Amino acid sequence: MVFYSRMGKIQEKLKMVQTLAPKENIEVWLLELEDIMKQTVKKYSKDAANSIIIDNRLEVAMDDYLRCPSQCALMGMQMYWTYNCEAFIFTKFKMEQTGQKKSK
Image 1 (cartoon, rainbow, N blue to C red):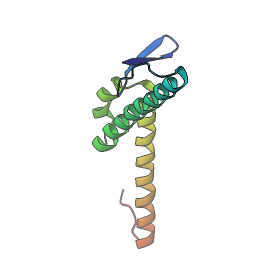
Image 2 (tube, rainbow, N blue to C red):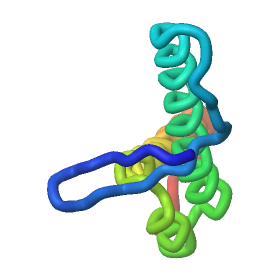
Image 3 (cartoon, rainbow, N blue to C red):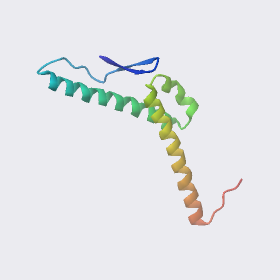
């Protein structure tokens, strides 16, 4: 089971994390479908973020990004940037606390 995301001329196909057969009344079925769609996007987002943060190198993870939906890949890059900014700020703070100066 798949669903499509469309941005401009680009159409992305996402394979759902589980299948769903229409049953009961339409309202229940659509709520279940919505939940599965959310789980699917969450899985793709988590995979994109993990691939870049674990590898800690943008170049290595680009192949994984090409397999991800564009919004998930963008989110992964933003997490990578935030992760590195946080690491820099933490290191700078620790150095200031211990009185060390960074060598150039």
